[in-house]
Length: 334
Image (cartoon, rainbow, N blue to C red):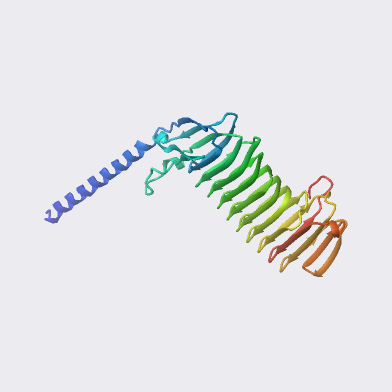
């Protein structure tokens, strides 16, 4: 026998089901109105004349940002995306002598809805003049990649939270690179002033860099420097610094860590240098062929190579990490 509560329960369930179906349909409509559910990428292109403007700022959250050289005085953009609102998200503004380009892939999506583009990767290709005064590229999660070219930039600032920053062939006055977890990979970079590198957990991989000064800081990110010619100040809390290959020593250079190991390789062509190496609880090893050492303690040494009066000084200090100091072998590596 049916009780009086059964009809009420039936209508309650029917109402809840109807509301759920309506909400599901609304969510699907929202997503379909913004994304290409067939998986076919859309390509949006735009050309922006610069009219002499050489200060360029780019802000984006597109997963891949590729900077390409352009022989003409204009910005050419190729934006490959799966969003049906791509044209609306490609904007630029002129402020005095600066142009600001914004491409926000996810800005229109609700934070509570799944991000369709996370599985279908968008790409932003930007052709820029190889000569600029100021360049700033900021990405929240995407990679920033400079195609290898003879770039001439007065001051450049590259920032990404999780993405990898890759740059080759840049000549500039100063270059700043900032990441949180993203890797930094720089090669064949020539600066008249400073290279400033900063990351929390990202790895710093640097090769063939000439600068007046290199400042590198990480919390737990590792550092790998090859063939550098600059005054170096490298500091990490928990990351390892190995190896660092010095082509030339600049006076006042320093390398320090709290817990990470430090390995340094010196070019055999360096005629004079003074090295202070100190560890609190780690191990200290060196295999220099010809040097004079002044042992202040078992874990605190001064090494003199060549003439002390001509020798630039390098300080290497760690608290708990080990120190390894090497000359390369006959084939140039250790």
